[in-house]
Image (cartoon, rainbow, N blue to C red; front, side, top):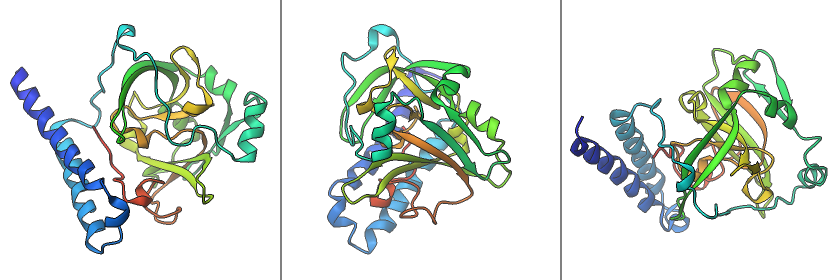
Length: 255
């Protein structure tokens, strides 16, 4: 494969992604139109189809060097959850925090933060791309999601991994996200508990956040409290598989 081939492939992928992001502009008003959800669905199918045709789902996201790290990793969205249970956990340095894993699993499981830290870890320096228009490179350390899931023993019917989080919006709706098993078992998909060699700060999602390095930033849920394996998500919240997806964003946000 030549450098020219690679450039053309990257152009096609990024053009499809850019077209999709452009569709999201002004979605508050557009989402009220009957035709707009159908158009978004076709755009998502285009993006997913182009990426799968050009780049294998198991391909690795680019990793960078220490010298490439951004001076500051920005924060956005909810940076200090007001949920009283979360605040109590944070006040005790998350000593009582537990990550529960349930749903379509043979062995429902839970982990303390110390137990997660005791599992084999992965460290990676990657770039975060946000739909708000900024990017930053940072160093993340955490346990691979696959390492956690295999301990719960997914049942054959399980297709998706749903992450429930501790941060509500102003209307009391809690953030959640979902990914499929291709991304869940990707070697760079981790539950991160460190950012740039320090415990993950609260504004960045402490004590644990999801990193799915081949997807846009809104897929990387902060303040993860519970993981549920399921065969569908139409019965969860707005039924689209994530907080932002329920507002009209794509479920699949591959880069």
